[in-house]
Image 1 (tube, helix red, strand yellow):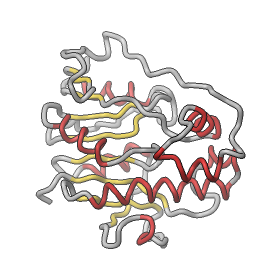
Image 2 (image 1 turned 90 degrees about the vertical axis):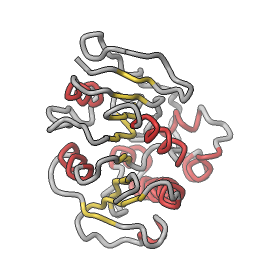
Image 3 (image 1 turned 135 degrees about the horizontal axis):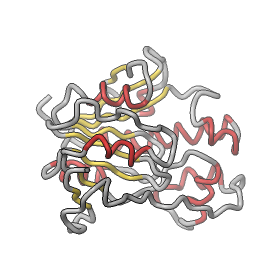
Image 4 (image 1 turned 60 degrees about the vertical axis):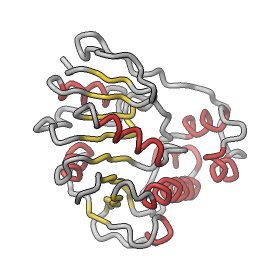
Length: 247
């Protein structure tokens, strides 16, 4: 493909099969409604943007769903391979010289974030969007990337981004501004509590404001030591951090 590629990881929306940590706090049906709303709100504007080609990477393989409602009709789909999250992401990104991969649990993630990611790839080998829990909401690669970019990563932990950056010691890495993903009822409560009139969260507010927990807990931003990464420039006009080779 001549255009840069955006890959959206998507799981077939089935009761009890999506957002299980969130379901523990708001119920399986609420979590399913949340997942469907977020996937649709993410996929439609991004897939309609002609600056890139958008693919849905779905799991389970061959899963049937009303994909035409969740994403624009005609959006190409590919199956995720088996393996852990890192193996699946590596295989999905491998065929494309410039590609960005996202999920669908970041409220408000849209074309502007994707465009910022591709701008960052114009001067870096890789770009990450840090999440406040220590993971990341976006990952993108240019042609020059490590052989095993996701080796030895402790997934679903506060160390996921730091572990990934350890594989990029000889590559230039850009970081986008951090965002909060929604994995639990506490995450959802904090999101709603801190966006009284959230344009991007209208659907969420309608469904969950009556059920949210009284929690304003924040996860601390991930911290990097000087032995992990060396900052070679300050924040740019796009509010991005450009990091030198991770050491």
